[in-house]
Image 1: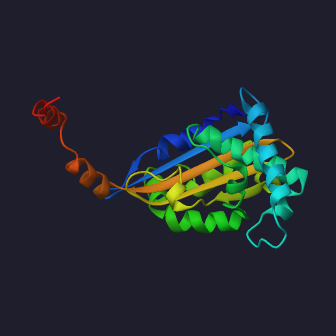
Image 2: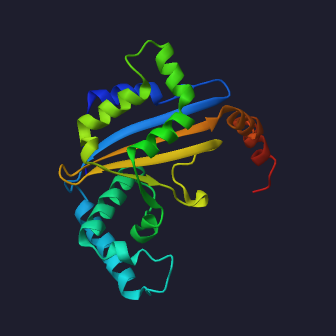
Image 3: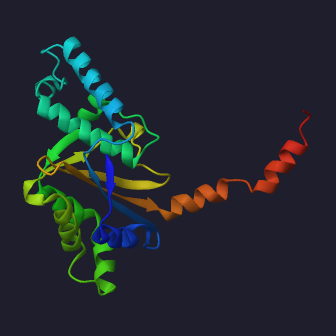
Length: 224
């Protein structure tokens, strides 16, 4: 996957990168990638493909939680591989299983994205307007994404993993979302992750962490 640079994405990332709203901080990041293999992508793609084929060979049609029907299609497997490769780019230190990841992906519409965005990012949108930016924050995001992946031709996915295994959750996270916009024809994927962090939780965590000097005193008193 090749990282693609776009000025409009950079402008939005500067605004959403660390938006302190008092008790909460909003963090958002937009990234775009070409589906052209680079680096270890080819090897990883083959590994993911084999993982899915192995899963298909062992799965039972009676398993209600099985993603067999969707994995039978080669084009669907290919799309899933691109989505997982995008997640690897966003979080290179996390090990995403193709089959397990499939169970956490759901295809959505732009209307669904808009509803979620308006419900959770209203404070960020208000801040955008107060800074006299052109148009609304949602309009700016739409235009930036449309420039990259042509939203009318996109498949939109939301990644909702088990909270205990969510690579997007940070210390003090209140909520977190990750949307992926995939254009098969252009072979591009745009990712948009945004979350809300409690500043109060982070302050409490820092208050409970002993200063570096205190750690040294503890170890100085121990018999080694």
